[in-house]
Image (cartoon, rainbow over all chains, first blue to last red; front, side, top):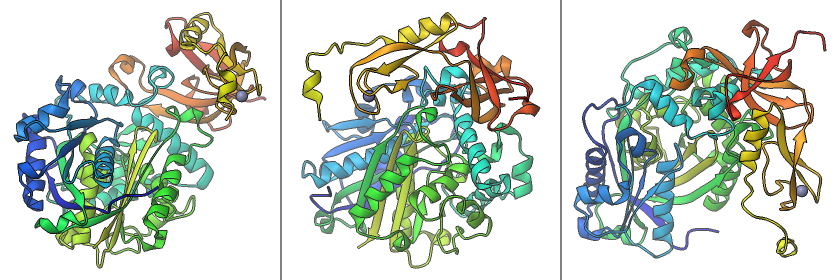
Length: 389
Length: 140
Ligand SMILES: [Zn+2]
């Protein structure tokens, strides 16, 4: 398995993430997509197809059939447009679909975007909508919320490996420190471990500051071949691996609750496809929908042994100047988590890092970067590895 | 794969979910047992996860007790359950080996991984949501 044609990302665009008021899904998408087109130097007539990740404009905005609506508003006429939905991995899946369409030779230049407009609904209704991403009959019906699923994993991780609330809070503190320097981030506010631990309980042992926020936003990428990239202005970054896998929908159907088998499987596939080792990765954006998720992701991808990611984070080893910078963008926790946009936004951040244009967020000498985008409670995993050309 | 052998078997739309709902409304659990390898599954499923055989049949899961594998106390609840918050949800491994997620009743101060729980049902609820487990007093 592999890419039949070498693929590159040549353009990136993003909106500000946050509670953005009365803006609509189509407007957010158009801003991010047009920025990506300008960055790549592609025009409307260059684009052969569109993939867009979106969890639920249906629930959030009473709008289905988003795939043609978005290119319509962007003035892309009569184009193949596809919406991907894989819970919080919807964006990663849109990119992967774009990559496969370009690698196969079906299309030459593709727009891969993600968008979510979530803040129209009150928190309790968003909680209910997100709970639909777990098994409706055997989990959501039993009172399980999304923070609840990750809280049960955190509890078990604490029990088996001695992970502490302080280690989880350290993930949030680092995320907020990084987001301070990211102009796109939802939060520009420093926090402390004490403040995080004092924040209200959402699902014990997860406090409010262990949870990513409810966010509006969009991000977009222009994908083409390494060969074709020479025809455009945008600095190309090669995609050297794209991996995806599934797992059981319900957490209780898995052999263990202290990590994601799906992350481990997808990571093995990704490293094999990229022909690199874990130690070759210079910067990574992982799916920290909850602080415990960042700890588990780093262990499952194989950067740390089980039980060692929490202490490493507490020691500062995953800060921007640490030996493995993790989520220099601020991550889902502090940059924000507009569900469908998240997977695309992670890649936006890695492309900036590998181009060397991440400004105050820049990790020194970054040549290889990785993204991990998780859907639901790990039912979907989408991983990408990117490399400076 | 042995898929061809099953060509004449009886696989049709299973409606196992409805059977599960009907059973739970009558205070018992129904799962499936693989007729080829003997593995049992709860909730019921039409194809054996272990050996992939479609020859499965509904069986009553007779467990009364289980042990708590993990749990959380939900403070921010969806609208339909806000009247119950904070409430405890956990994953229980039944004495028969299968695992289920449900609301855990009992004193939250007594909560601990590994504690024994008793299968029970909420009489005011219909459908899968009526499944409950109750913390058993320390004794074994
Ligand atoms: Zn079997």
